[in-house]
Length: 226
Image (spheres, rainbow, N blue to C red):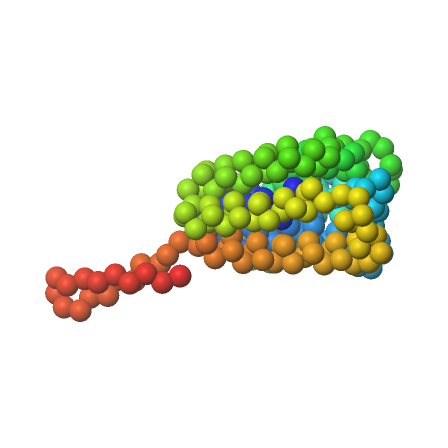
């Protein structure tokens, strides 16, 4: 799943935990991907380009089921003890796990049980059917928006980011040669996607604040900020 729809998952968590700020939820649903970016930059994990496609050949430290559970548990313990916020701790841990679960649907069979064995590995491979992938991801993003009851601007942002992902989904063959020659390009591009989707989803999902100003008895004026 592409960055915009992982970010949209944070809207589901926000709806269930309205008292929790959206920004830590956005971090939670992408924490696994941020680790993948770091691990690719330093050479712990890698991808390859072959047969005209990108293959995430080795990502067990960031994306395995075992790693997801461990990261979720560590996040829960840290937030619960450091910030004394059980609601945020639970929501953050669920957000971490959501990334691995969702990727098991879209990835090839590259989501391992743990970093310590090659099998079993899961993935339905929806990514191999770009048009189907696009439709499912777009509908998922719209569902998250609908469930959250977000603004029209948030819906437009989700739709536009999904459309912008379509050329990347359809890229194949020699179009992917630059990624093979310069492996840092893919994690850099994904990092950029994460940051820009954080900004738009975070800003557009934050409710306007109504400030009550009393000028005189019986007079009221409301200004919206946010």
